[in-house]
Length: 238
Length: 243
Image 1 (cartoon, rainbow over the protein chains, first blue to last red):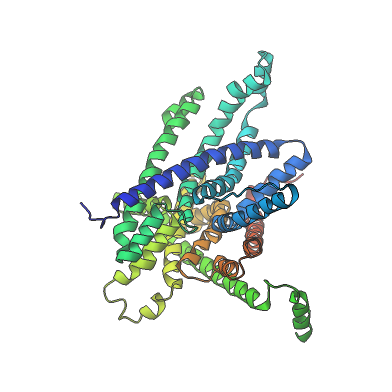
Image 2 (cartoon, chains in turn red, cyan; image 1 turned 90 degrees about the horizontal axis):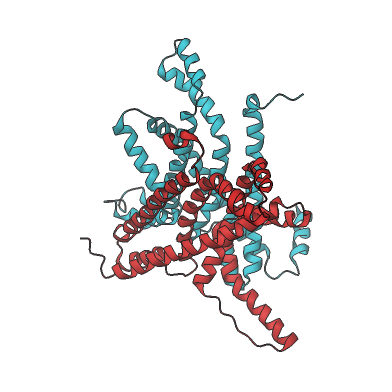
């Protein structure tokens, strides 16, 4: 067995932080993505404009720069806000941004934009006839969305969600730069202390590969499920 | 020039953060980022062409190692690859005594190696996908002309595949530009590094990072514009004919 020089437990803790961060930001990103997609499909020009601005800005700027802006700027921004509250209404509160929460919010915000594009394309790919059929059956709009539009949309969105998830997973490594103790940061600290980069970086890389491989398998299963009823071709060719 | 200088000083006179000094930092960062991204993309592309051809080979001892390479480099974060090269380069026996050490002791070259290996892996997969999707008719036509495999690759498959790969490759270029921001972690003064310096010096996160974000945004739009023009030119034969 390889000797991790006592860094083993901390590396495992870091791996847990990475996984929690990735899953929580994925959830946030999916929610934001659905909101963005509906904004971009909206006929209201203001809402449409806001959605477009959000996706363009976020996709045009590096993740790390956005992360630094929100993380270093977020605290100052909130302090300014609470100061204003204090002067204006005499409400004295102090909010301290926790690095983990900041990480989840930033990554969620970044990938919300990518998810938004994925969902928009997927919603547009659903045939209107399907929704007409649902209405003809007398389904309420909510039921039609849940039973018809959403599952059909997911079939088109799944490959995109899978790609975004893989990129998101790798992006979580960047939180180590702004001070969150994920497994990359533990490995970087261990490397600096022991001068053995391969000993710590290669296991971390292997964990990333393992998570990626497992999620690829999971997405293949999901794709199969959402492709049910779309002909034998999907059964045989995948 | 004198006039321009005067105008510039006037413009910056009542600005405490964006002085000529910090703007110089940003300019230096801009140059470093562009160099790093451009060089890694060019070398990565040169590596990716033979790799993509080999990736589609029927021989398993050629195909599998290339697949393993792209799988590992696409499945792990660039930051880890950068750390591995940056901290790992000294472990090569005798590199510190060789003439290469002059180059390798700066952070720029380890970063260039890491970025090149990373983009080569992505580009290999993009080109491989494009080569695989070559229309059967094109290959049959080439065979009917009696072309050898090499000639067919050079004259038919590769030119046609490169055109089809263009949109995906454009995304990869933008991805690389954004990914290059991690270079600032290993003491390179790229655009993000310059922004971080300005932030730390003046404790002004909004000014420092929003300014750099705008520069990145302009670069991204520039790349998108160039690729859209290129696609229009090179994929003209695939567009439906206008009325």
